[in-house]
Length: 252
Image 1 (cartoon, one colour):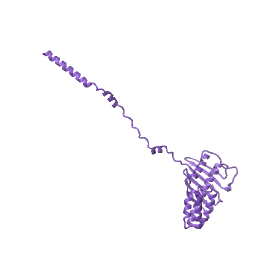
Image 2: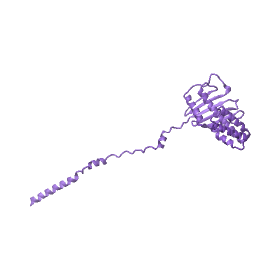
Image 3: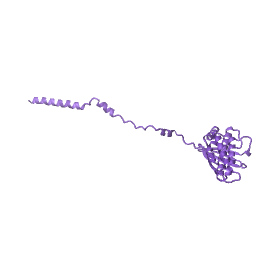
Image 4: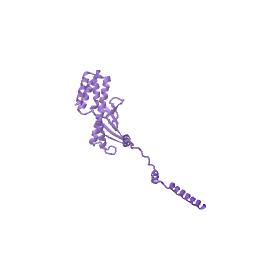
């Protein structure tokens, strides 16, 4: 009887061992799943840049260059002119009349065409890098002294001459002279409309003369002014009609 009990206990222990082994063995595919779940989390990545962000990244720093032109001839009616503007053509003109002590300052905004010609000349000269003397051997001080200046960050250069054989410098000086003549004409017309309406016919004649000899920086900029003159009943009819004719010429 004791032997039978001992055998039964043996069977019982054997069953327990087998039963425990079943639970201790990993289930099929469990190891692979565990490995899969143990993968390192992917590093966080930034979202793709928007078009606006890309434009901002590719945006060039603003051009801080400033350009200067100066003319002096004490015996001329307009005896002193200075023009200053930035890379966008926005700036001011200051001029002094003979016999007057107070300088006149007016804002200027070069048209796209005029600005292109001016900046093109500065670029062609490589003004800041150049050391060329623009003064010709012959001197013509009675025609006035001109001065060109460029300032960019900590660099600047000034060149002075009264006559030059450099075609690009001559072109640049002529462009600034047209800018000055246009600004002075606008100022004179504005003053005449307010204080001397009877002077406007003569100023319309001057306007047409300047147009014919290509003496204005960009006559198209003056179309709004001519429109105002053509409808201003405070001005003589001859001036209003002349303004209309000038508009038609500019529209051709």
